[in-house]
Length: 309
Image (cartoon, rainbow, N blue to C red; front, side, top):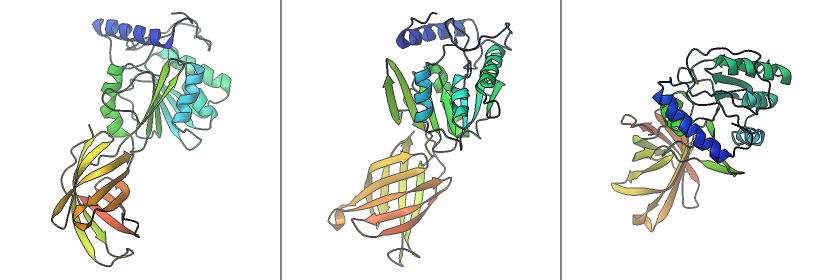
């Protein structure tokens, strides 16, 4: 491929290449092979990978790299994993910003190239490259993840992201979405797209909420029942309080932070605004009635989590 290809034509070629690769029996690694016209250091010799990459290597344009890292809000406190790191340009840029950056690629040629580019940029103390299958890579230390993979690989990778990344971790993808997992933010840049998701906490199930008590607006404690259904970061449900069930509205889930509103028609339509954080089986936060003072609540999950997908 040459430098005259547009982002959209590259996407089409990637899809065709993936189809051919699957037909040929390639493994599932998600990394990419080299194309002509790349401006970064070229490998001095060819090295045979342990197995074939799943997709051809197409480097992410420089201006897209910068926007991906900015969208993930990467800084010196972060550990960024780039899945299918290619020539290492995302890893190098993140390391320049002070982050610890780790590139994963199954092709040893690309890994060697990434190491050389990190050395030329003077960031080897913060940039690391590993020859590995991204599906076998332990992501639990990551505070941000970037990728440029095909939609089929994104969907295959999704359960691993949910299982290993902490709620609130940003995941940024160049050009390709995650099927029915709607992005939290999308940038359209010169014919390319950049998608951002935050890993949502698992909030599904039945919860009991104890409202009031020490430190609140009242010393009395009420126990309510909260039922939540979840489709990724989209949440719906009901709150049963005083024998009445009320639907939730204005629900918002971003990482571990969950907020919603309940309107109590039996009390003249007074609203109760809940906001708090999920931490495994616990849900803690405050509830404000109308414009009144906020009262703390503590929640515990009664039923097993139903999953976020």
